Image (tube, rainbow, N blue to C red; front, side):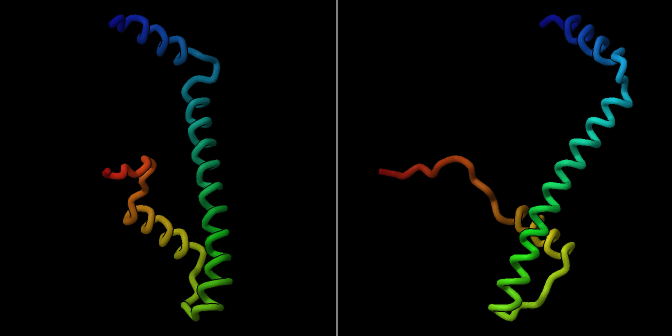
Length: 89
């Protein structure tokens, strides 16, 4: 494997006019967009919880951040499988 190619590529990108600061700004922008989408999903879940769980089932109301924490916790506890289940014949 030719490591000089990788080294030259990294040096070319590092010497870019954007520099390290531009890379950090791009990473922060991507993180802000991802966090924004997460907040939007949590807000929708929070509205649904208030409309359904509180009014229909008389469960306690949650704050926005409690809903976000519950969503993260359930995401960690419940595994998500993307592969199709294989049926045994």
